[in-house]
Length: 266
Image (spheres, rainbow, N blue to C red):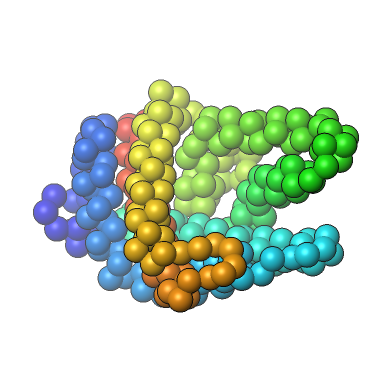
C-alpha cells in the first residue's frame, strides 16, 4: 500500500495475513501521517493539556499533605482527560478505517471517561506507594512496610491484567460490547498475540525515553529549582512532541489490534 487515503486497501492488507514487526511499524507510520491531517483538534487539545500537566508537576512543589493531595487530585483529572481524548481518538480512527461513519461524540466521551477513571486506579496506587516511600525517618518508613508491599502487589496485579487483556482499550471503545463481553472478546483474540503488542509497546517506550532525554539535554532542563532559562520552551516542545507521539502510539495499537482482530475472526 502506497497511499493511505485508500482506507479500504489498508483494511484489506490487515485482513489478509498476520503482519511482521517491520510491517506493523510501516503501516502504523502511514496511518500516523494520514491522521496528522485529520486529527488536528486532538493534537492541539492534547498539547494544551500536556503543557498544563507538565507545568503543574514541574513548578508546584507541595510543602504539606493537604496541598499535596489537592495537586495530586488535579493531576488525576488531567490524566483522565488526556486518556479520555486518546480513547475517543482511537475509536474515531477505527471507525474511519472501517467506514462506520461518525462516532457519537457525547456517548464516546462518557464511555472513555469512565474507562479512564478505572485506569487511573493504577496511578493512585503508584502515587500512594511513592507517598509512603517518601517518609524520611526509618521508623516511619518501616511502620508502613506492609502497606508498601500491599500496594506493590496491587501494581503487579494491574500490570499482569494489562498484559492478559492488552487489546481491551480498542475492543471496549470500538466494538459495541459491554465490559464483560469486552473482556471475553479481548481474551479470545489475544491468545498467542500478546507478545507482539507488548514488544512493540516496549520499543515505543524506549524510543520515547531516548527522545525525551535528548530534548532535556538540548534545553538543559532541570526539574527542580533553580530552573533553567529554557524550561518553559522545553515544556512547550515536550508537550507538542507528546501529542504527536501519542497519536503514533494510537496508530500502532490500532494497526496491531485490527490485524489480530480480523485474522482471529476469519
